[in-house]
Image (cartoon, rainbow, N blue to C red; front, side, top):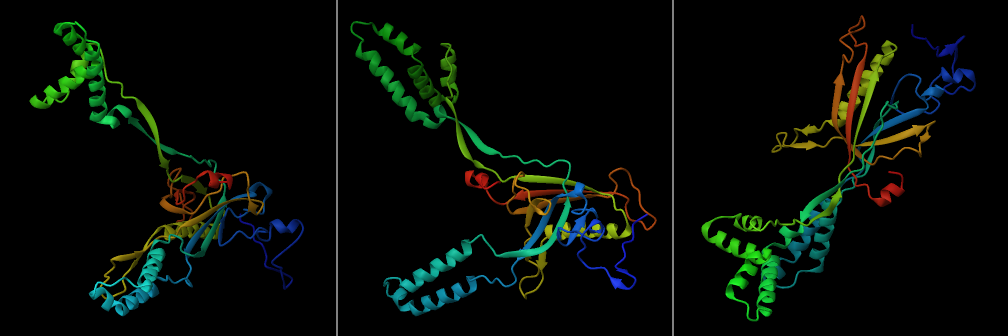
Length: 342
């Protein structure tokens, strides 16, 4: 049966902060945010590890400079229209205002402020993968025909250079056994008759094959992905409501908002979903022994209302809910980031 914690004793209100043994009963000393699960998160010594999700919305006070930059650019162009017509030089005002507009449009950092904070227990599995992208390239294919023409020409020069009194038959046999000349001549014939692999077949005839000369070429690193699985088993009706709010908060933050306003828009434009800031905390402070996570987007929200079979309380609320969240980081983790704890 749920424990009922009084808010007043003998008509005297219980203070918000209590020291001593009763502190575990009266609230969360770490003050983790808007929603939290389970009920003893941050108060029970066994629940000192916390993962905190903070959805971030664009700062309402922030207004892009794009509009003013467009207006300034228009004014500078209007003022210099005579120079445009006569083919004169472009004014410095036009150059400066164009640069300001491009800088603003290319800016990726939009000021954001917290929208909602959700603090949950650390799931059983917390892992991160650092992946790099490499391509296998063939120097043989990359160098192409120019390489083989040069090598075939070198082979022929060396062959005739020391020909001396060698017979034509001997020279022909030597040319036939030289892989560069053999492949070059066979490909030349193949181009005439439409046989694309004649050069490789010619090499096979003398027990030779092309060496692809494979090399590994670094291409870059990908964005890290994270998956978290949580199982909610509400202890009371109040905790059931908290779980519902938590699930709704994740779904809300991951969804776009269609803007139906505007005479011509007709819902063409959408406000993008909220990104997240994810922190690993221990006793209310950032845990330095767990990797940091940069700004992320919530790619997928999966809610299973019957992870162990369908079962509900008398009011119809599920006995247990499994929530699976998939995030993708929006920043590239390089050496500098790793030194900073990512």
